[in-house]
Length: 420
Length: 148
Image 1 (cartoon, rainbow over the protein chains, first blue to last red):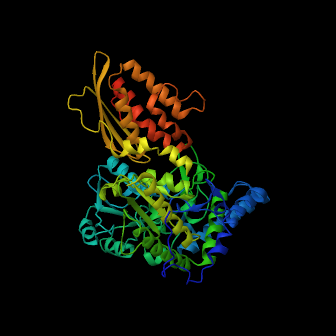
Image 2 (cartoon, chains in turn green, blue):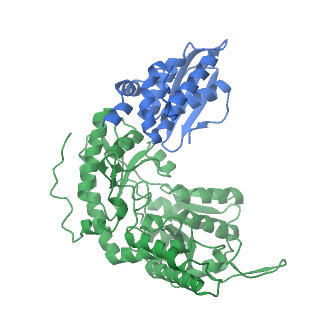
Image 3 (cartoon, rainbow over the protein chains, first blue to last red):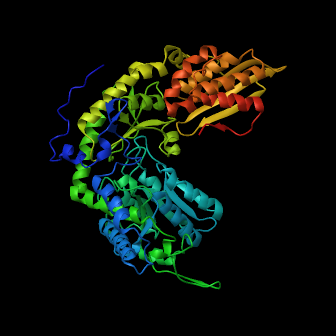
């Protein structure tokens, strides 16, 4: 087995005490197949810091009650905690008001909410929705369903061979029938950071609203929805070091006022008779039924944790890891990186000459390295780059240079076993 | 490493590199598509069935080493077999790949090299995909088969 000498470019100069940070994440400290776990599947979901796990446990141990209903103490505590989580998220995104923060299950549901509510009101036959060629299925299929229902058309911004959006083509797609632009800030399959500011600016010049899929951006960089001036922003808690089952839709108040509720039920109403229902105020209009109260509290705790570390420093550390990982993988014979955008988040998507990604994934797993092998819910991206699947190592704030060395070594092992 | 060598035996690696019957069968009278959306394995299976006997079998597609070797060895194994024999072989291979019993792997001949797949739960569907596709082709199913 080959060994890799740590290059002079190996991270370490940054004041980032990764070993101390790793102590905050209990799940990282275990063995799989007799090897220390190397968790490189962060774009699928991140591990949770102890603080988040404790917040969930504390809520269920002490405060559990339904919100916005009871007059009793527990209900008041649960309501306070839930609403302060909403304000925490408002601050994190720099939204103008907590009325603009809607809790949903995850980014997928947030997009479906906009497709249903905005789509029902604003989109008609012959209208157009603009997405890009590097979207996750969650930002493709809801729009396809809407287009099919309304007789509208989906327009797709192409990408170049590096995985960068072709902005000139994008500008040409915007027209009088464009009702919405829905584009990711960071591609989950390739790591491309899109020029989202420019995308929004060009759309707004034509008075077209923009939804930003921030599922892969929120864990890696600070987000300011007012600076971006986006109309909708969505992200998932579980990819942002928070619990599964909780996500956020940010919407400008003017839009959220204008579009109808998504689901009907309790909590989203002010008054119900069989003749007429008066909907609740924002954001409750969009939160039918008992929400994931513990999840919202856990997500707020995760954001406290992230802000405590500093998202700018997280981004710096991950960028160092990305550069080092890129260098290590490029040194492995037969490796081809898929996605080499000029601005990239910490995703290393690659194929190994003559060896199917699924086989690589199995061998990596046996070396303790958890990656995703497949199409990453982005089958059109795979088609664009002419591969059935890729191996994807996606990095998080707790990953280390040594883990990337283990990855590169395991990829060499895969070559030895399968023989490319 | 030992477990991995059990999975990726030389026979399997050989069939992966040089799959047998990897071609389009122009005069096939039974075909079926198999698809594994999770990992992107795709297979198109061609059979020529005459008088209840599989006269010829071939496949095309993209997939991992396990699914490709499985398809390769399956086509080699069913050529010349009666349809009911092939169905019975499907049952025995399926049992070998999915059950824990000691008897699993009996009566499958060379296909016993796939017994190691059982230790890799996420890979079982790669090995069974060609077999489900075979069953679909024999029963004339119109919808693509999926092992998800």
